[in-house]
Length: 137
Image 1 (tube, helix red, strand yellow):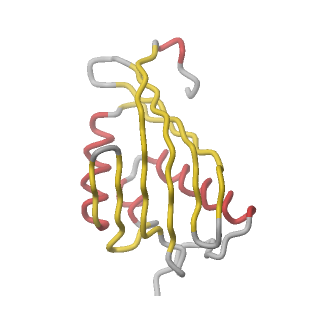
Image 2 (cartoon, one colour; image 1 turned 30 degrees about the vertical axis):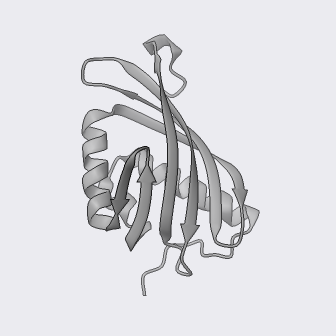
């Protein structure tokens, strides 16, 4: 059976570990790697898009990182329960025309008993920034 450690129920320590693993995976910008942390039928809401299942996750992330260049993400712990984790995050990216943005948001995650994320709900807002205002280099 496929598992992704740490497994629920989460402690503060294992929730922080899960968050760091997610941050590292997303910063790899490898859609296949990222998708392996989710259930086969995972449900996402990302901004105004609904994504269902690993195949759609890979397609979504491939497009995202074709548009969002020089992507760098930082996630921070907000709260957790036995099988849920809430994070706040910010990331920066550059568009193909050279403009920089910082995105701010919150994510709510729900995991199955094997430590795979079965639900991900993300609320995200973008702010145009100047290159010299970047935090993550």
